[in-house]
Length: 187
Image 1 (spheres, rainbow, N blue to C red):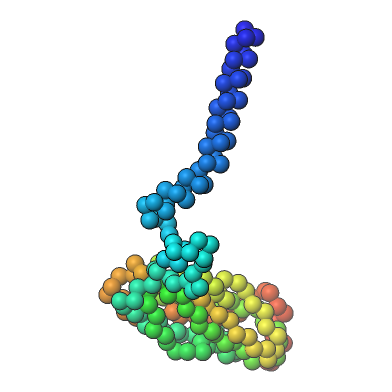
Image 2 (cartoon, one colour; image 1 turned 60 degrees about the vertical axis):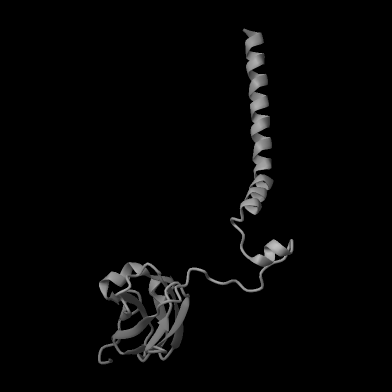
């Protein structure tokens, strides 16, 4: 019985050693296979000069064959100013775009507010991907304070071809219970 256990432990140690060696060998094997087949190569510069890097990265996901007009609508529910810096932009699907929004608290008290986005047409909703947006969080602004916030987005190239205009609409509203109520007689 003892002899059988020692044989089993020996076999397991050999198997673990082979697995460990195979794991280390995978990286160079993968590189050689990819180089031989011409797959997973990022640029011609990397193929021609070992260790060289491409100086500028190009987003190959951008669909340059068409462009979409994105219109920006800003609605404020309360006594404050809220608007986008541009009314619309033309973008290619897959292109990362940044648009700035401006907000100013015209009240004589601190307020907490948040924006809710909506899209038109409705079918564009799942293809409009925001990478950064002020609508993801609540914001506090002091009396008279102004802020600028970015919306960074990309439109999925899988957007149906018949959609040529998308409207991004924000409604900015005060969040109740987060700041003291306005004194009576104001606003």
